[in-house]
Amino acid sequence: MIFKDYYKILGLEDNKATPEEIKTAYREQAKKFHPDINSENSFSEERFKDINEAYKVLSTPASRRKYDRMWNSNVGKKKKFEESKREEGSIFSNFFNMFFGEQAEQKEEKQRKSKEKVAVKGENVETEIEVSIEEAFYGLDKKISLRAQNGKMKTFTVKIPAGIRNGEKIRLIGQGKNGENGGKNGDLLIKINIKDDKKYALRGIDLYTDLKITPWEAALGTKVSVDTIGETIFLHIPQGIESGEKVKIPEKGYKDGKGGRGELIADVKIMIPKTPTKEEMEFFEKLNKVSTFNPRNNL
Image (tube, rainbow, N blue to C red; front, top):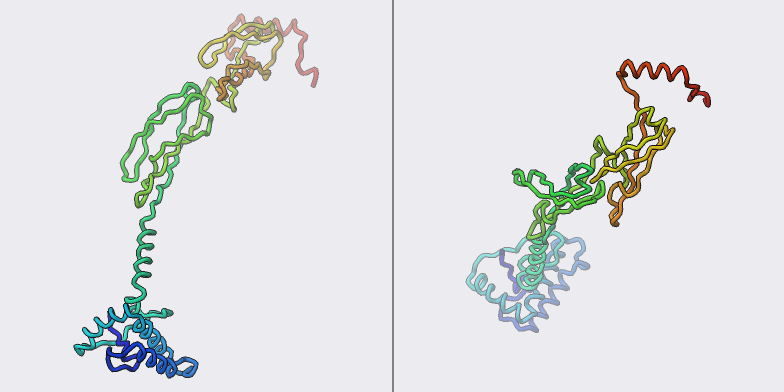
């Protein structure tokens, strides 16, 4: 810190001046170098700031005592000094802040350090996993492996509750990115995608399945076995059912989250043999001759 002689700035010879002498010297110097009187002299404005700064320090007993100890060390022993450079736009110099800005600087520094150490929660990490309809229906513990921030693979056990909805997310608290300055870790969010399979397709809480029957079963009506989740049931197929018709089976669909289930909807598909036997071909030929049914009559 470059020392500044406040007594000299006020036109005083030494630090023996009384408070009244300091006040009188201040008024004289302030009047002499006031910017309104010396508007064209830029030095006068800087000098006027120094005069106010000097009086502020020397007119307060506590700050004057502190300053006098420095004055005796620098001026009393005839050490060199020079005026400190003033920060642009600042009213008081750094030297002045030793007396009146110390507490403010300490407070500002404390606030700065406090801001630097604000606890910041880590970012959440999101991923997706696929499960089958039956896995989602019954629930399960599923292990997944993800690459952690340090580049190493980390394995998590995800508890998937029974009846979870498609697209629902499971949160693993604290398994995301690390927090900063003592902040909590982020969370790991796992989106559950329930995939359709060859047996079922999930739409909301309803399950869809194909019900394949023969032409003669469709014509005569029959009873067929249908696999549902957890059991096999027997379904009555009415006489004359057509492809595209749907048979709804209540309470055999997916869980509705309220203790019940949606519907199992069977989509009827009448199938014919791709490689019929000789007997089957003879049957179809005979049927073609005797039948008067023509589905295109209504077109």
